[in-house]
Amino acid sequence: MTNGEILKIAMEQSAADLGAKASDFERLENVIVLSQENDRARKYLKLPFSCQLVSYGSNTVASVSPEFRELTEKYINKYPTEHLFETPNLHVLNEALEKKGQRICFMAEYFLPDVDALRQRTVEDACPYRTKVLTQGDFQDLYLPEWSNALCESRKHLDVMGVGAYDGDKLVGLAGASADCDTMWQIGVDVLPEYRRLGIASAITSRLAIEILKRGKVPFYCAAWCNVKSVRNAIKSGFRPAWVEMTAKPIETVNEMNAG
Image 1 (cartoon, rainbow, N blue to C red):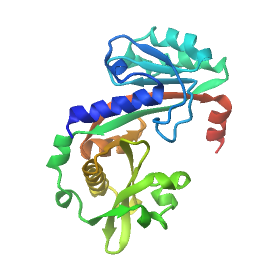
Image 2: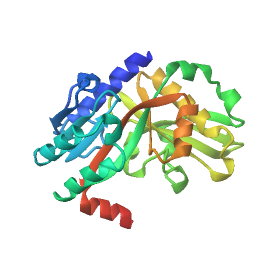
Image 3: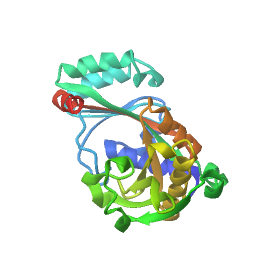
Image 4: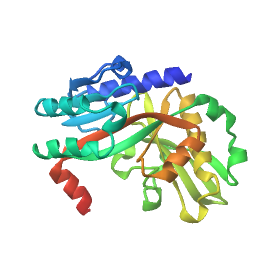
């Protein structure tokens, strides 16, 4: 699979999530579409969106419910794409959303593998510990707080494979793959605190990415912009920035998340 093929698959998936066309992400002008249910969307998404912004860099594609169309269209056409996903401009959108009972909730950057960078990595050079490919059956006893990024207890059925790093018989690092949609599997990774900064995270992330590609799926990686250590791991593991997303949720939902 080439980098171009990987990017095309990602855009097709984003289009399914948003109710758009893959070609919309390559246009120079911004695009706004109405959000709707779609069986091909990522399984954890709650559709329809009230306001969802996605950019692969050329423009911004907004997927909205009808009552949020006017305010979203006004916002995305007011500022350049490179400033739509940051403050202070986001305050303008947030204030408009709050009048309709919504707030900006999630903002994240997504990464896709650079197959050339992946080929240049060898697990033996990167990690001082033994690594092992794991299958769904190996996860039964691993739904613990220390592995909460690699595995998701509320969606166990989507956790399809992983790569573990072992100090003897002790699991010290785990990268897990979630089958979030038919063509793309998301990678999450955890390393025990006392074993960090030893190259484990990038070794198991990159090996898992290679294993996913072998199975004909596209691995992808998500990180908050402020999570510097996660972004560094993505880059070191052979991933490159691909797209960004912003999601609005009901004010009550945001308040509940903050209270928890």
